[in-house]
Length: 553
Image (cartoon, rainbow, N blue to C red; front, side):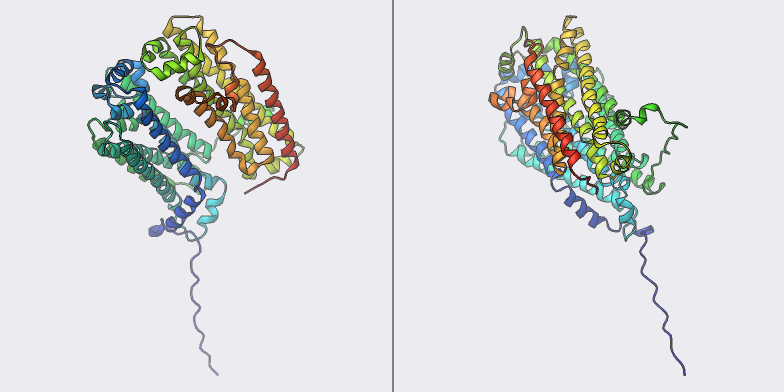
C-alpha cells in the first residue's frame, strides 16, 4: 500500500513587512487617520480660512481710502512694526492685497505650522507611545507606513487650506486681491506647513514621548519666527532668509508674485522628510534615538506628593508657556510708546479704545493687549487641566489610583499646577510687558500698573480651570469643549472690541468681567465673584470624577 503525501504549503507571512514593502498599508492608514481627524482637521482648516477672510474683509472699513493706507505705511515702517508684520518691500505699494500678505502671512504661517506638527506627532509618536503602532505593525504594515500616512494627511490638510484661501480671497472682490496673488498666498501657507510637518517627522524619531516631539518642533517654529522678525526689523534681511516663514513672505503675494521662494520650502521639506524616514529605521518601535536619562538613585521627596508629581509632568509645558508669554509681553511693550502714533488714524481701533476709557492711548492699548496675553495663558491652563484626561485614557492613572492615592488628591495635584502655573505665566507676561512698556514710554510708573493688569486676570483663568474640570469630571468624552472658553474670550474680548460686538456677548466670558487695567479702575467685587465661581466649579468637577468609572482606550 502506498500513499502520496502532499507537501504542506508555506504559511503566509504575518510579521512586519520590510524591504521593498516598507510602505505597505499606507493607504489604509491614511483613511484611518482621516477618519480619526474628521472633526479636528476641518475645524483647524475652517478656522484659519474664515479668520483670514474676516481679516481681509475688515480692511475695507479699516483702510478704506488711500490716506488711511498711507497712514498705515507710516505706522508699520518702524523696527517694531516690521518685526510684528513682515518685510518692508510690501510697504512700497500698500494695497489691500499687499497689506494682507504683510500683516497676516507670517502670523497665520505659525498657526499652519502648529497644525502640521500636531497632525504628524499625533499619528506617529502618539501611536507608538500608546502601544497601538506596535499592534498595527504586527500585521502586514510596512515600517514607514505610519510616518508616510501622517505626512500625507498633513499635506492634504495644507493643500485643502491653500485651495480654500485661494478661492475665498479671489472671490472677495477686494481691490488688489487678484486670482494669481490669491493662489500664491494660499500655497505659501501650504509650503510652510509642509516644512514644519517634516520637522515633526524628524523630532518624532528623536524622543520617545509625544510631548517632547511636539515641544521640540514647536521650538523650531518659534525660532523660525524670531529669525524672521529679527531679519525684517534690522538693516539686513539675511536672518529672514534662514527661516521658512521668511521664504514664504518673500514670495510677495499681490506684489511681485514670486513662486521660487516656495521651492526652497519644498526642497527643505523633502530633505527633512527623507531624514525622518532614514532615522526611523535606526531605532526600535516605541523608542527614541535619544536615550532615556537615568534617574536618580533615590526619588525626590517632592515626587511622593500628588502636586510634586504633577509639577514634574507639567514642568516642560509650564516653562515653555512662561518663556513665550514673557517674550510676547516684551514684544507688545516695545511698541507701547508708539501706540498713539500707530493707531491715531485707524477709526475703529480709536473707537474701541474710547469705549475702554483710560487716561491715554497707551493705557487703553495696553488693556486691549492684556486680553491677548490672558487668552494665551488660558490655553496653558486648559492644557494643564485636561492632562489627567490623557493620563486616564492612556492607562497610567489606574495603577496610581490602585494604591492609597485618592482620586481627589490625584486630580487635585494637577489642578494645583494649573491654578498656580496659570498665575505664574500671567505674572511673567506682566513682567515682560511692564519692563518693555516702561522703557518704550519712558514712564517707570507703568511697570507696576502693567504687572497688576496681568495678574487681575487670574480669577478668570481659575474659572477656565473650573469649566475644564467639570467637563472632565462629569462629561469626560466632551472634555475638549473646554477649548471654547479661550477661543470665545479672544473673539469677543479682543476682536469684539474692534468689531463692536454687543456687551452681552462679552459678559458670557469670564474674561469679560475682569476690570480692564490700567485703563479702568480696580474693582474687587467681580474678582471675588469669579473666584467663588471657580471654587464651586472645581468642587463640582471633583465630585463628578469621584462618582464615575475610569475610561481607558
